[in-house]
Image 1: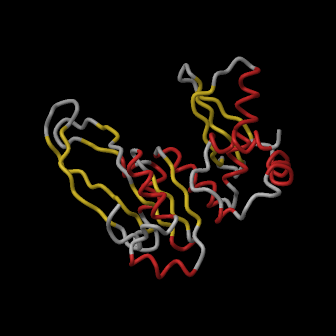
Image 2 (image 1 turned 135 degrees about the vertical axis):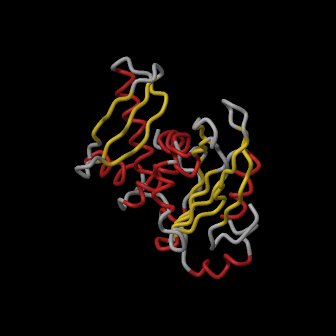
Length: 224
């Protein structure tokens, strides 16, 4: 968690290929600033920054590591963390308890902070915010769609927000059998969630850092 969060930070690591055992160099981006390195945003969205390719046999594998995504032009920080220790450090940083000195100059403007635990969640948050949406609405909407899938006999393993080529909102649903399904999101549902479930919630930039399915379930229980 050390380093200059206002700047991109990289390190070169040696990775042993899981297939042939040959060692290859791999660049890890522990911090990404999309103003300073705008080309990295696409690599985050495609997952390329977590993709290792062996120089000898061409084997590809995903290398997971904690990474801070800083979309400074929109005052957004999303921290992808690997373990409980990094999670606690991210919470301390975002709450201001352990904020690097170099970042304090940015505190004059309120930031939107989120903590995620997978590259897929990192990608999802970026897409949500780039479309001007509230991720709290999306997480609550997931609960409804998971419920609908259950009624159809579908056990949802993962569900992620995305936007189609026609700019339509949708959920990509992965079931326990590895099959993928698409479901269009009803914008009326998002409006209802905004008006009824989130009406007394704090501003999006003042809410919790961990807006996920567990948060959504807790929020739904508050209304019962």
